[in-house]
Image (cartoon, rainbow, N blue to C red; front, side):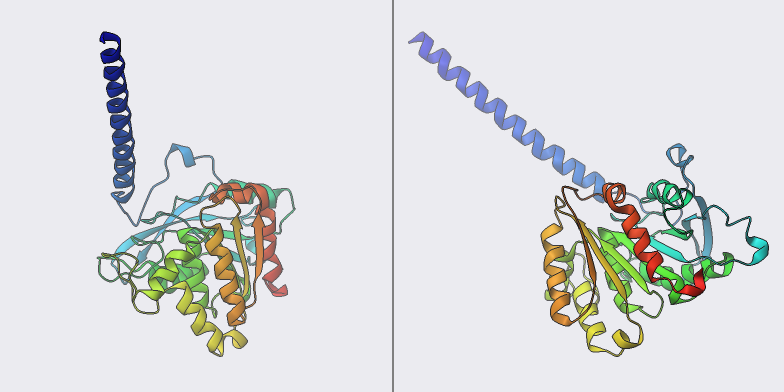
Length: 316
């Protein structure tokens, strides 16, 4: 009798302990989520010690539309300074970070891999600009103050870079790339502004969310609502149905890792583009998770060479 009571008591203690552990795990996940969503946004984010050895410069420009400074990071290839006298110009790739809200520091770790590829002469020299995507990461979102993520990039950052640096200031020498949220932004922007970019490489994009926005009157969620048609599905439809596809043909490379949680919806989006008649290339990286760094470690040369191949001969 006594041993039975002890056994039942032990089981109850174990069940309570398991319940508490489960509750603690759920609460920890909630806390992690809340911490992520409460990240403070700034248009200027100064590099810290962890960035000091990266081959980038952190710069700012004044946004006339917002009346505030906007930060960006820029990678200038070896030989850029020494060729100043010759007037040599370089193609440029704009890299759009993942995550929300935006920061120009979020993807700069890739610059070390890009620099190594260029210094080893596997890749031709080019400039990379790491963009701050704004509070909603590459979306224009007028419901909040200074929420012009796309407009500041297109209307102000690109002209600023072309003025300050020796870029090839035309679509023939300009590319766009991004991962996750940045892949979503790359896709929308390349279809909205094919007159600005000849080369585009969206990676690990959250196309399921873009489809949801398309099918639910702009609703990403109950509280986040974008303008009608402002998503990767509707912008692709508009591009495919317009003269833009003939006038400004895009070279597109969609890349994703097979272990990434967005893998299936990237496959679905590629099938959608095929139905529209939009041409693209694909890069499926086996056994790679949802990670821009891992993708670049495995196939960075392929991505950079893709852009180089698309830049016109006058960028040599």
